[in-house]
Length: 466
Image 1 (spheres, rainbow, N blue to C red):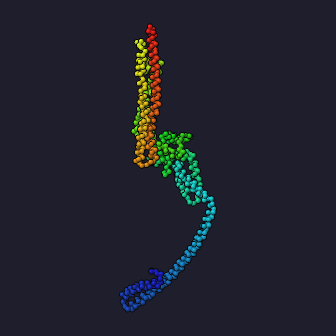
Image 2 (cartoon, rainbow, N blue to C red):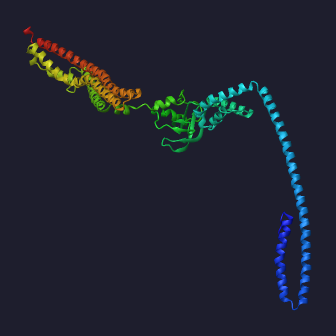
Image 3 (cartoon, one colour):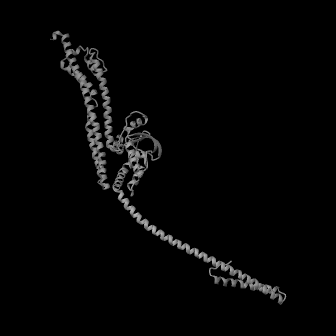
């Protein structure tokens, strides 16, 4: 059924639709009628049927018009209700605005000194945030710095739970600063790979993982094993991990990792020697050769002294395994020499002593040369290093003090190496000289005594000669 909101238009449409239908029915009736009377009767029946249909359509139209009127009234009622509710809400909004202003004024009055407290809380949170961010303790308790960062940037008054958490985190940091803790946690090894390790933390000062020293990475919020470990302190870290109770020796960095990071960057002796380049290797070679010769001569003189001391107890039985025995054996029992002139005997004794002196004083000339050449070679290395340093500064076009300090330090290594071999060899040469002189003095004393004894024996053997 076709519905139209306009009654008149709807009636015209119904009539236009009914007209073709009636014409079609009349045509079909005319085709089926056999006579005029039948056609008239059929036409009358069709008119009556159409009249009934039209009456039904009129009743339906009147009923729809009443329904549309009722719907219109309902829409108007809803509109009036909405307008009334809008006015009520508008009035309520105005009242809420007034009440909100009153409450804001009341809050401002009641806040009072809480505003200053809020400022203090933000300041404290900002100060503590930096310390928490760089603290080793944060490796065990991560995400604490985020809380302090948010509180430092907050624009509203903190709540009681927030203030309690602030106090708790500050108290925990102070408590953990005085504790030695052992726990298992994530670390980053020297190759940059994450791993689980046993961690020993001494307050906020230093931490070790699996017996190796570690530093804290604030960006990762994890500990990282230092690529370079302090070799002299490794045994301390190993004992610290091996000790489960009681007291043990430990290393504490009061700067919280800064001094340890600088300490491990110090070059070792091998690295320092490599910085000395060719001159440094020459100096070390001279020093090693001098040290080997000095050690060899020291043990030789020590053996000779022992043999000479043993020979002094047996002057009547000279042995050829020591210089004194060989000197004594030159004239022992030689009666013919007693009759010779004393000057000839003295020359022969001196000859025997001089024959032993070169072995006692060997390598001392080379040691004196090494002592003198060491500082000179060091000076050469220093000059070469300074030339390289100034050349680097010229090429880079920068007057960076660190570049100059590194170059000067490299140049001074040669000087240190030169003095490092000269000073010890100087004392060693002095010691060897003293040992050799003492042995030569014993030979001189005994040879002089031998001369005197020979003269006395010669005079006693030939009393007429006197």
